[in-house]
Length: 155
Image (cartoon, rainbow, N blue to C red; front, side, top):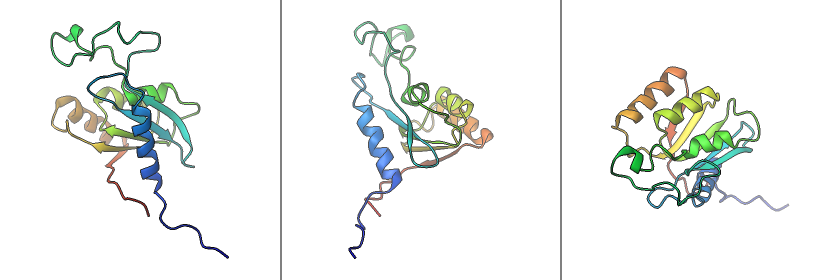
């Protein structure tokens, strides 16, 4: 009897890679983020990437990062985490969400309200900005676990 292959990727590696693939759908010229929501059986229940709301053309609003607020992308873009929740095809209770960047406070609220139990993120490069400090406060008080993903290269 032949043994099973031993050098396969972990679930964390699999879903984080998937978040990078879905991020490639983003039209944002400076930041591409994808999110994958999975249930306790490791079945994908939601995918999302950062972009303008459905039905708005990518040329209709600014993609700028600096300037007056209304002349930047920030008031218009839906983040990957929120889109994954909006696009979910079943309940997100007790699910995990995989995402490239640690979620902002607005996404943290959506994660909490949708009973997602764990956030797995790769980068926390905005750690000291107020909206990310607020995010950690929200997640901590709601009992949502979060951890940084480190590539394992397979198990």
